[in-house]
Length: 485
Ligand SMILES: Cc1ncc(COP(=O)(O)O)c(C=O)c1O
Image (tube, rainbow, N blue to C red; front, side, top):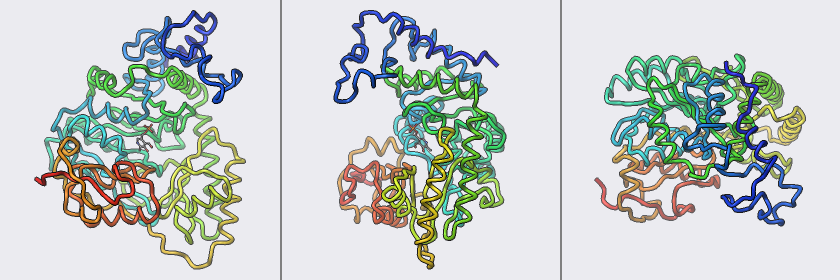
């Protein structure tokens, strides 16, 4: 292991501050003077002094040779990757770059149908052809499981032209796939395994949590450092193993999907987070785990309340592990949407996401016991006044995939027309519909809309879900391909 005691980019920026030159570069706020005092007083500017550019000694993300290169090498060393990259446009651009860097237009990729919309964006940019696998449904918990090694094996046998396999692990709900077994199957078939590990950058520091994807043989993974490890919003990383993923293609792709003016604030926060993880990653991950485990135990003691635990994972390799720092809970007398609203409006508790059955709270090392106690007090109060009669709050399983009539890219660039939403069944979608969060598309461009998917979107609409994708968010109208093929 390299000397992880360093934080080269943080140090380079600190050094730069010691003798600020007269500044005629971007950004134009000139050492915070021009930021606008309605927003920030001079004393409040704090870390904004790190908002600089590729000035002397500060290196260049797109051609790193100094502090950024060193910082990325330390990151790769910590995560046991061959190469790691800072991302200033979230895991969104990491997923896009993994697809652009491993596939050519028309190549087939095997992936679960419940991927995040950033993966769909990668398919649109690169023109790959999706071959979907359905995640299994865990009815009791009302969440999607992962993808099983058997399903991957069978699909690779049936589609020998597949060029890569993509997984989401852990999911938004903390469900992990058996990455090790799937990596073995992929490598036997000679294809790389790419993993969206947006929610899993903390899984590398304790053996009390499922193992991170790279440690299990994945060839590439993107992680949102901002979700679980204390970096600023948008700060993510991409790790690769170079045996099956050519770094030059990844680097070319990253130039395409990242700003030419990457934020030094974000990159410094990544260097700093890596440093923190190197110094005390185990302590951080285990603190989150202990807090969440305490809350899980207590929630499960409350009448009418439930909280997803490892004991609910059915036998079978399609849900091989649970990230127990994630709290997925619900009340049998109300929908997850209602419960989230009550927590927000009556108890001033903000949770990450809700669905028909569950509320998702992300617990990190930076939470304190007091936060969990407040959540428990609120749930105690809600449980007392919840009626005795359980409601049938069944979660909606992911509908069966619709026929893929054209690739997402072909559909994106095809001429479209607008129809009334209720007339759209049987037509090919020209736009995406993804309830947000979690940003998993129910409708992808290029898919022929089925009755089942229409009903799933309607059910979300009735709950007042917010949608990403359609130009008309009210869904009075919807865009379909002009000429059906
Ligand atoms: C599973 C998954 N993948 C990718 C992303 C995109 O990550 P980012 O917000 O860092 O761009 C998200 C965001 O919520 C996500 O949940």
